[in-house]
Every structure is written in C-alpha cells, then in structure tokens.
Length: 170
Image (cartoon, rainbow, N blue to C red; front, side, top):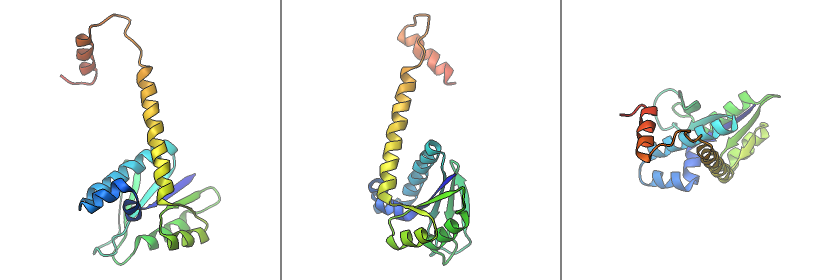
C-alpha cells in the first residue's frame, strides 16, 4: 500500500492556482480545493492520502477529520506540520507500505528521507495531478461516447425530458 502525506500549506504556497487563492485572502477555499484535488488523486491512484496543515499558532488540540475519504489533520498548538509529518511518516513506514511526503521544504525532505520515507516535490505532485485530471477527463469523454443510443427514434425535446426524469428533475 502507498501512503501520501501532504504538507498542506507548503503545497498551497507552491501550486499557482492555490497560491493565487491564498494571496486573495481566501485560504479556506485554497484548503478546500487542495482537499478536493487530493480526493481525486486518492480515488484515481488508490493511495491513502493524509493532508497535514500547520496550526502551531492556533490554540487547542489537534483536529482530525475525513473529507472525501482524505484524512485531514490540523496540528495541535505549538506543533508544526513538519513535526507532525515526521512522526506520522515514522509510524506508518513498514515492509508493506511505501510512504511518500509531498513538500518542497528541502530540510523536511532530507529528514523524512533519512527515516525511510520517499519525497515528492510540490512540482512533481502538481505534474502528477495534471496528468490524472487529463486521464479522468479522457475517461469521461470515452464513457459519454459509449452511451447507448435509444432504439426508438426520439426528438431532441423528448430526449431532454427523459433525461430530466432520469436525473430526478422536474
């Protein structure tokens, strides 16, 4: 099994689309978009994905939840994402599991690499994500082209009505 641990704010700062949202003071939307993209990644690759966000300046305990089957962790007070990622990677590495850490933080890459985890830079993950999105798009197009045609000839208007009924719309 493969596990991808994502340094959330590091990736947000590195990916142009997410960085732009962050710079527009819409960090929550950037986080949500990253989670959505990592859900697509997880669904497509079958890898387990864990996203860690820094909350070392926020009071309180660590917060964990799942969003689209992606595990999301906000670190506890006075704990950095790097510290949490290092502990997490160390606890998850075993003979049957490859652990990848997505970050462009050079120091963090060396630290996790020395523990036996593999690294993925933000740029590598972005390129992989773009390829996955293209593959998903191609598969959807192919599926739409394979939609069986009705054996009974229908006008376009009637076909639209039937499609609305099929989707449960009035």
